[in-house]
Each structure stands twice: as structure tokens, then as C-alpha cells.
Image (cartoon, rainbow, N blue to C red; front, side, top):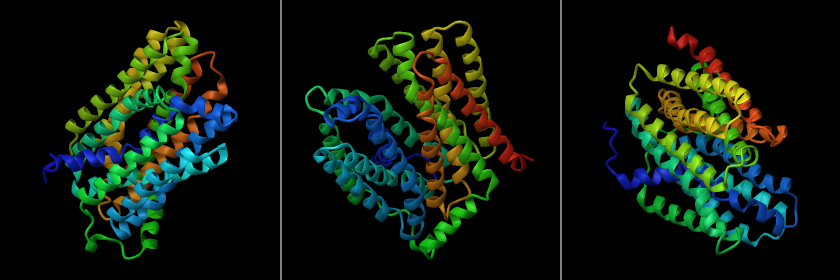
Length: 394
């Protein structure tokens, strides 16, 4: 089957559905200080609205993915998008922090359906290198949103308050619900579905015993841990430590996002049935070595320009890792693509969510802790990948 999409509108839809993470998180970030101020709470409590959404994005996938192997992709996807839309429209009516935290949790659960099922639908349609190239297209569409979402959120705050951000998210969810309802066919036929919902969860437990699959899942998860450390710590490193302007930081952030898109496409176009493991190992090793050299360089010659140059290499390689690891992990799971995609999403969001607040524990007076944590995540990812996929390569 050709990897070139025969229905570009559906490809764009799947790409946007896969971007519920950055849509839910990055667009909201500029409004976070205002939320804490207007709801008369602490910045730490305001941060919990981010944490609860990350937890929802992670936990929702292990529910939605296996159920989609039993009931098909479209019904769970519509239910998830509907939940995201409903909670987005309810959030502007909150007047205290805890209802907001709870609604953000359910917003994340709803958004998780788009993340997990966009990958499952891709696996229903393609396999092998064709799957890798199609995932590359989806991830390139996805990669646009971390660039534009914070800018859009900041623009919204120029003419309304933080509640307006969620109104826009609600409208976006409604458009995606209608687009999915009328524009996306069911991709998992009845004869390929599991017989019961419990069978799908049993398959998930079986995947946890599959060493190569776990190697791909955990290595991808820790690379995302490095990405989340960068997202959490980079603004403080550039603006507080090296005194870059917010505008210059936004440019650096956008360049790294563009780098991820380029690396995604390069990996997807060069992926074959035989070289996937080599590309994945090379990408993670390159990021691990680059982060090690960057840590040494920043320690010896503290420089914001040097930090930016090193990070653009490390963060761009996330795109190559994401495309290749997802393709390899889903490659043998045609019948249980929902369960496999769910575990991949859980690894990315759970490990990333756990690493995200760690960088803040070291304070904002040096960029070294951020770079050190990125290096640690990359080397752990490489060691786990080699250790768990070693037998496969023999």
C-alpha cells in the first residue's frame, strides 16, 4: 500500500487529533500566572492544573486504546473528543482552583483519545516503512502546534482573560468532533477486533512482557522525559540565567520545534524494514553524546548561544526517535494496535510528566541542572534500548 495519503483532509485531521497534548498544554502556558492571580491561589496550585492534564493524557490512553481494539476506533475517538469539548466549555465557569484541576484532568482524558487513536488508525492503514512515512507526516503536522500554540495563547490574552483560551479550545474540540463524525471512516473492521474488552487489556499485559516492545516504549519515554525537562526549564535558563528577551526565547523555541519536524521527515523518508533499529539507536546515541558535550561546554564556558546551539541538536532528534520508535513498536501489533499505542502514549506522558517538575527542584540560577537531567534521560533511554532489544539484533 502506498504511504502517500489518498485523502489529505483525513491526514490533516489525524495530525491535529494527535496534537491534543500541545493544544491542551502549550496554548494554556502564557495564561498560567493570570489563573493563579484571578483564582486567588498559589503558583504551585496553578501548576497542578498542568500536572492533572498530563496525568489525564497518560491515564486516558490505557483505557481508550484497548477499548478501541474491541469497539473500533471511531466510537471511542468521538467519545474522547466530546469529553474534551465539554470540559473545555465548562472550565470558564470555574471560580476556584480545585474544580479547574479536576476539569483539567478530564480534559486530558478526553484529549488522550486523539493521541492514542491517531497512531492506531495509522497502523490500521499502513505497515513497515509505509507506516513510518505516514507517521512522519502526522508528527510533522503535530510538530507545528508546539510552535504556534504558545503564540496563539499569548495573542488571545491580549483581548480576553485565561477563560478565553478554553473557549477557543472548546470550539476547536467541537470542530474536530464534527470533522471526525463526518470525515473519518472506521478503520478497524469487525473481523479484526478483539472479542471482548478484557481481551484487549490482557493483550496490554502481554506487551509488558515483550522485551523489544518495552525497549522501544521506555527509550521513547525517556527521550520524551528529556523533552519535558527542556520545556519546563528552558525559559528560566535563557531568560533568567542568560537574560535573553522573551521574544528571543520564543524564536529559539520555534527553531527547535522546526528542527523536530525536519528530523521527523528525514527519519521517515530513510526508514526501511532493515534499518529502523539502527536509525533509532543512532539518534538516541547522538542525542546522548551531544548532551554530554553540551554539559561539559556549558560548565566551562557558560553561554546562552552555546546552550541554544546544543539544544537544537538534542531536541531536533526527538522527532527522529518518535517516528522510528513508534513505527518499530507498532510494527508487529496490527491486531492490537490500540493497546500498543496506548502503552506508547503512557510511556511518553508518564515519564515526561514525572521528569517535568524535577528540573524546578534545582532552582533557576543555573542551566546546568537542566542540561544534566537531559543528559541523564538520553543515556537511560539508550541503555534501556540496547538492553531490551539486544536479542532482536542478534
